[in-house]
Every structure is written in structure tokens, then in C-alpha cells.
Image 1 (cartoon, rainbow, N blue to C red):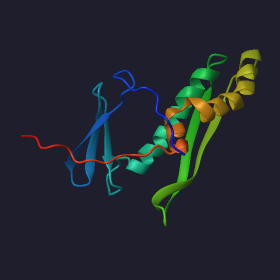
Image 2: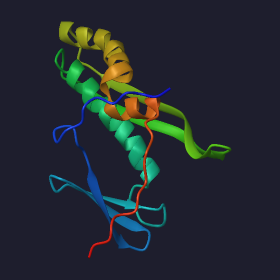
Image 3: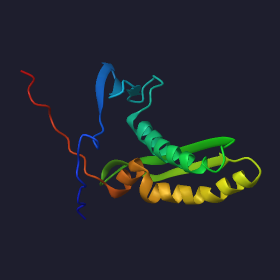
Image 4: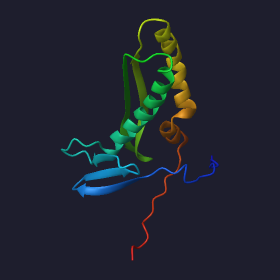
Length: 152
């Protein structure tokens, strides 16, 4: 199924730069100057690209759910895990069984009760329409690869 894309503009653009900083090690930089080291799963502690994808899934959903539920009560603890299995089959290498799990504790009382009651709805809204990362994965947006033009 072909998706029609909404209008794109400078306001909708997102991007990062990735630079090799050593054998099997890279640095991603965003437009605001933030840095994330990345590795290929060797002996360094850097996140692998797959781990960063899982972090993006948990992060996008976590930020959204936290924003929605903390309007009702500030959580006592907020923990999100993202997991899946890396497989290689006729579709190539990919992740299957992706799962994002929330473990959130709210205080006792009416505000905490409202937040606990709302938590499943916040997660559903995040999954169904709000989280850009998981929506992109679920919708299966194609990724184009290209070689940069000559730098003469």
C-alpha cells in the first residue's frame, strides 16, 4: 500500500550527521550539537545501531506517556524497556517481536489513581498515533540510500 506523504518543509525536517571516529566507532551529531557515540558491538560500551533503534522506540513512547500521565500525578518511578529479536531470513536482517514495556509507579491518592487509570490509554494513544518512531516502524516507510555528489 502506497502512503501519500504530507507536505514537507524546513519545519518538518529532521536529520543527524554520522562521522567515523575510529575502527568500528562512530559519532552521531544533531543540529543542536548533541552527540551520541555508536559502535558495531565490539568491546566498547557504545550503543549499536540496533540498540539505538530500541532506545528510540522506548524513548519516544516514554517521553509521550510520561507527558500525558504526569499531568495527573508525578510518577514515583518510571521505567521503560524495549526489546526484540534480531533475525536473518528471506527478508534479510531485521528485528521481530518488538515490545515496549512500561513499569510505572504513581503515588497513592486521587491523583495517582487518575494517572494509573489513564496509563493504558496513554500507552494506546502513543502506539496508535503519537509516537513518531514506532509509527514509522509500524507503517514501514521506505528508506532511500544514496552516494553523495562529488565535493569538487
